[in-house]
Every structure is written in C-alpha cells, then in structure tokens.
Length: 259
Image (cartoon, rainbow, N blue to C red):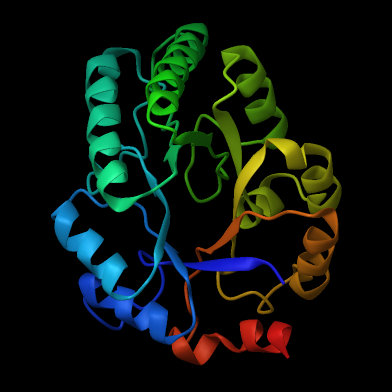
C-alpha cells in the first residue's frame, strides 16, 4: 500500500491550521505537507511535528503574492533576486522542519515577455535552487499544473517538465507528479508514471472532476494505487484534494485500501 501523507492546506480545514497536525495524526497519517509554512513560526511548526510524530514531507518555495493571484515567480525575469532570496528562506524552514524536498512552482507566464526569456529565466533559477538545496541534502522538485485551474501556468505537461529537468542538468532536480493535474492535461497516467518513475520524487492525488477524494470521479484509483505499488514506488503520495463533505468523513477510500 502506498505511503499517503495529508496536505494540511486542503485537509482538516474544520480546525485552525496548527491544530491540523494533531487531526492528521489521529486520522492515521504519518506525514504532512502544505503549500507554504512562512506565515507561521518555524519552531512552532517543528514542535507540532515532533509532538505528533509526523514527517514534514514537502512544502513549496515562496511563490510571490499568492493571495493576490500569483502562482510562482520562477519564470519571471524581473523577479530573480526575489526568487533567490526565497530559496534561502525555504532552506531555513526546511532545515528546521526536517523537510527533505521542496517544490518550485513555475508561475504564470508573464504577459508581454519573450517566451525564450521566460524559459531561460526558469532554467537558470532551477539551476540555482537545485545547487543550493543539494548543499543541504534537500531535493528540488518541479510540478506541472493544469491550465484549466490556473490559466497560463508555464509548466503544464509531463514531457515539458522532463525536458526541462534534462536541460537544467542537475542530479538534484526531480518531477512532482500530480495525478489530478496530469489527468486534466494529458491522461495516460499509468504509462506516464511507469516511464518516468526514476525521475518522480513525489506524487499528489485528487479525483476529477471536482478535485475531491479518490473514488469520487473518473480516475480508477483502486487500480492505479496497486499499479504504482507493483512498480516499486517507495515515495510519499500527498492527499491534495478538497473533501466533499468533511475530511474525516471522506477517508473511507484509505480504509478500503487497507482492508
């Protein structure tokens, strides 16, 4: 059975954020992830992880003004200094939290900027971040995201991400494969995962349509999880979905797998 971790940005929203660590542990999760830790004191987060014996599986690099609609700045030529400062901030948090992998959100391609310059900036920023994280023993991930949910998102297909990883040329850059996003963009989930398994450091899940629990939509997760197990994937799978009717009420899909 795969190792599932709770995404605390999406799950257990019934309680305040710092209380979600306890809720996740009580529900049986051994690891957590969330979009960003930066609004909270890193020592307070580390205390919650230690108290509830949870692994900090993942968080993102700073991604600009999220509340204002930004979804990453890594491909923005005029934000390179801000991006590099963000790498340092992310490393500070990750070191305290014991987090061994960080995800880089490409961002929405800036309007009116030459596409070649956008690409060049993204490659250079990934090289910088991969090198800095490697010094700390932390992996850098990149994630394709569907352009239905985030129109204009620069990195949006698996093949594009693999080509980018090859161009960056760092042994410390990996793919974060979000099954929900890639179902929306390209389908062909099983063969894509099998083909690129050595490059995949983390997976995330939600069903489609609706981005709700596995089993609520068109993806045959019961079969897919077995397939991923047979491939020998030993990384975490982040539960990054929107509970349709309460987090605890929607965890029956995990219980069914375990049973």
